[in-house]
Amino acid sequence: MMVKIKHKPFELNMYINGKWRGGETNPKRKVINPANGELIAEAVEGSVSDVKSAVQAARVAFDNGVWSDLSPEERAAYLFKVADRIDERHDELAALETMDNGKPLRESDYNISSAASCFRYYAGLVLAPHGKTYNVPDSVQAMVIREPIGVCGLIVPWNFPLMMSVWKIAPALAAGNTIVFKPSEVTPVTPTKLFKIFDEIGLPKGTANMVLGAGEIIGNEITVNHDVDMISFTGGTDTGRHIMKAASGNIKKISLELGGKSPNIIFADADFETALDYALYGIYYGSGQVCSAGSRILIEESIQDKFIARFVERANRIKVGPGNDPETEMGPLVNQEQLDKVLKYIEIGQKEGAELVCGGYRLTDHGYEKGFFIAPTAFIDTKPEMRIVQEEIFGPVAVFQTFKDEEEAVKLANDTRYGLAGSVFTQDAGKAMRVIKKIRAGITWVNSYHSAYIEAPWHGYKQSGIGFSLGVNGLDEFLETKQINFNLDVKPINWFSK
Image (cartoon, rainbow, N blue to C red; front, side, top):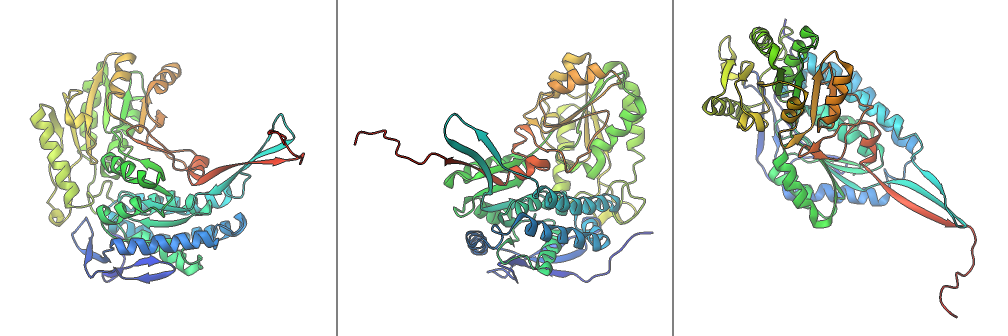
């Protein structure tokens, strides 16, 4: 039986300086359920003026210390309250996440629980010591303290609407910063619900501000605004490159988690069923709309025929459907634009000479014609220079490559501009460590895929980004380091003649 949440389409407003408000202009953006095309909500469309108001509110709040001057214990108490409210509304938030993004409810369940856990983690972490003292060859006590950066602009994508928002918001607030937040214009529903929680618990005015609207307007103004001290962005590499340039105006700090084209290396001596299961999970979880998706499956030649045959058999049996159906294993793509992009890449792959062995088409039967469903897809007979091998598709499209030995596996694995994630499947521990150490990627697994932990840092190499999310490193991203030297022998230095 499908899980439904009863509601009429509602209006989503912005949250600036502790107040809900419409936009400076009248247009509203329709938020659509990707499974059936139904209207979920209408979101006000922000403007440059709205961003400036939000930044000003955050600037005043930070400079006045209404949040940054609170003790770590006081800030932590607020964050624990947020986590509790998320737990209390878990079912509602999970249902809304599925409606907004399309992902199966079991994925949304995990994402909502993870969001609450993330607030609790950083609430606890901020209570830990964050300074150091140094013994120096002088009558000086040298020390380092950590301070909030100031006003942080946080920009998130649509594939994990609430969880990805919390990955940035929780450590930014825990560190004592004020924020100007922009959710994806495609999936603003659950992030807006989070700000309702902020409002309910009485977060000090100006501490957390949210502006809705298009990235090229709202995101750009957040990035170029000189009163914003830091930008933390998750999204495409091309957009990240633009942010790096735009942020140079006042040399603001940037943290970027960008694209991926991650290798999943499977050796002949791997546990076959485990490797097969994770290969499917690595690319078809989240409908492939995951930056760390195992989109390039590298198979040792001696097992390629058997492995690919079994992979195709399993892929063809994946239950694709609306996320609120408990039998659904893979939901729709997020919108028409994403569907068109993925179908275009499938066309490109065929023109490049790769062989399509499963999927490759839109699903329109069983009432799916109004949704953005696509069958799990896979290509074989690929070449390293093909676009489908080099470029991030961000959809349920697996690309198979084959290798003869360790050396070739590593060469193929590193042969893209990206370096976000990668995995190795083998029962030879020495081989696993040799190969995983040579993969140029920030998040790696051995005999596993996709597991992510709040306690451990998440980041990419090469053009997959700079900076960190999660773990202690994720908190450090939102802190400045200040050196203090305290003179213990107060007397004239007599450096210059009297």
